[in-house]
Image 1 (cartoon, rainbow, N blue to C red):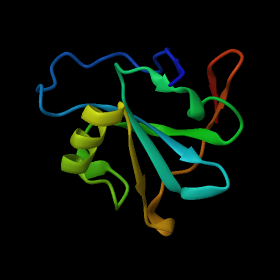
Image 2: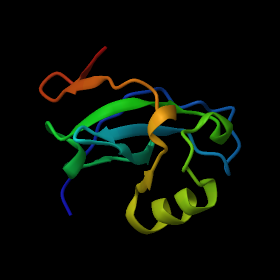
Image 3: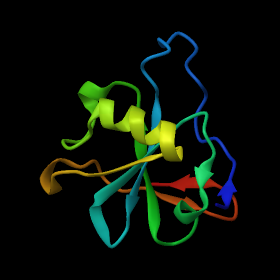
Image 4: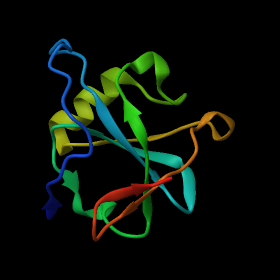
Amino acid sequence: MNVVSFSLTKRNTSQSRDQLAYNLFRRRNEPDLYCAVPEHYPVPAFIIGDAWDFGGRLDNPAGAPRGFDPDAARHGVRLTGYYLFLADAGIAPPLRAIDTRTREIRV
C-alpha cells in the first residue's frame, strides 16, 4: 500500500488516548462517503488527488456526521489506518478542497 505522509492539523495532546482526532475526507462524486484518518496517521495514497476533498477535522464524536461510529472507527484504524463510512446527505458539512501540490486547503 502506498501512503503519503502529511499532517493537516496540530495534535491536541490534552485528548485522552481513547479519543482520537480525525481528519475527514469526502469523496467528491459521492459526498456521503467519508474517510476518517487519525490526525497523526499518514493519509492513504488513494485520498491524494482530485477524487477526495478535505471535509474538516473531528475532535469529538458527538460533532461527527451521522453515520460515524467511534467503535467501528477504532477497529478500522487498527486494521487499515483509516475508517470509511457513509453519512446522511443533509447533515454533512460543506466541502473544502486540498491543493495536492501545495497541500493548502481551499475554502
